[in-house]
View 1 (spheres, rainbow, N blue to C red):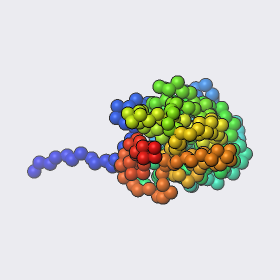
View 2 (view 1 turned 45 degrees about the horizontal axis):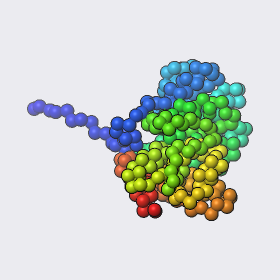
View 3 (view 1 turned 90 degrees about the horizontal axis):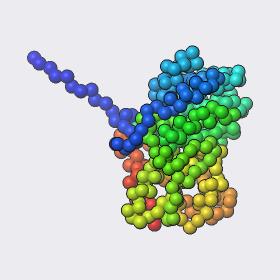
View 4 (view 1 turned 30 degrees about the horizontal axis):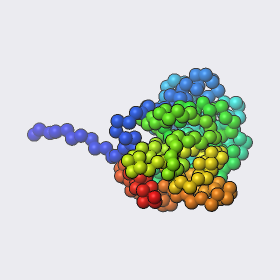
Length: 329
């Protein structure tokens, strides 16, 4: 009796990408940027909680095996060891999934690292809705958890350009940082806009007379795509990229909001405690009296499934953004 080999079926939940077909990408920009930074600074060390391959830390591990530490599935130990290394003058980059850093090891980051203001750089994979594996791995509230922690810098990069330029600046910055990692094949977008990453600074990526979008993370890519498509409807859209969530560049953002343009924030995060509430508090404190809409994830545990389907369902897709803006004009 003959038999045929059936192809192995794979779930699309984890392997699906939010990068569009044909879009320019760079593979493992964080891993390569960390290697480059470490070549010029022997104080940089890498640690991972059994997730080096899935956070692009494997590049560093291969280049500097004597400076890489595999801590196993023990996030508290990962951050505790990082704190000890930082106390000796080393500059640790500690990688795990965002959900594990935020939910399992918060107290270690807060008291061992943030309170003494140590230079430990926490790198969180799968931030927001970048996996379809459901609430166990979707870190949709990580910024909300971390924003109230004193001394902690929070960075939400858009693309490979942001990541490559952010890594050496994070290494050189006193105090702890949290980087929302985009891993694997990461889109390259911002090099087309004469952009450079500056820690703590927002940048006007694209001017526009009708609508202003304040965005962070991969949603800046989506905002730029939506802005280009809305030109067909004679809608002129400005995009302001805010890669640093804390400390927040309120001066730049409020200057762009202090107009009669329609305004939205865009973020790959719950509408609770993230970019929207950061912007809203700045608007209220300044007394602008400005209405700002939120394009973000709902305050709920999200479904599991194929990533493109989930982005469409929860309003993060480019077509969803365009429809939201057109309906508000």
